[in-house]
Image (tube, rainbow, N blue to C red; front, top):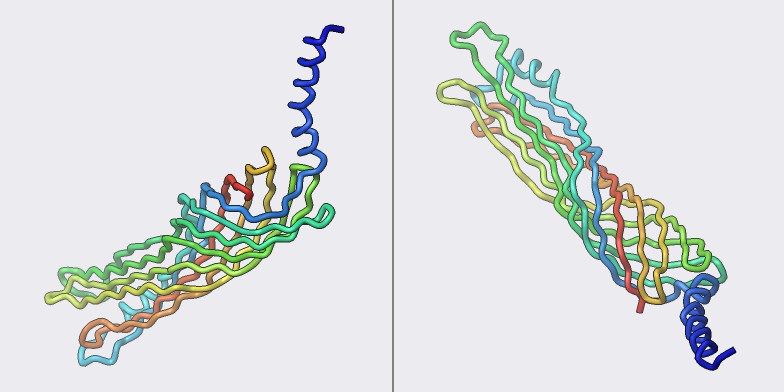
Length: 253
């Protein structure tokens, strides 16, 4: 066997050692940062109720009852999600314990616009238009993780705190002259919870890829508003929940 052949063989073997070591002895312990992107689909609901507002001129009971019979809706809007994450893992045997935080874009929500014709015998007929909208634009979570690792592979479960800014808008207008109309808009940062599962694969000692699903629930947003001169009072309520399906990459220090 020539010296040249032995050197080439040794060189090839040295290239195989890191891959073998990674497969058998990879340790997930350490600080990491990364980025993610994927799809979000919301599970939102809008509900409103109109009452007489206490003014000198108030919405007729027949129009109030017509609107109240049809002011609830559910939607499952699909949008984009993406952002950055960071955390720390500690591995003990095959078990991996960690804490992760992430922040990113989350575009979910729904809008609804409905025009009713007044049941009152008026000529020309009176049109009543109600618009509602609920939406989010970002999401932040802080979640412990528990995983099970086998070499460069890891599966994990996670649950923790979630937060998002929830925006609610509503408006009412009729076609009377002059019209009775009003609008409402408010944004509030809401806290809820997030939970999900995922898996990761270490490409080398520093880089890994991941895929995960998270479910978030931010509870209810409820507001009451009155049109000018007390013509009508509206109570608008929204539930905002979302599924996040995303892939990402992490760098471990």
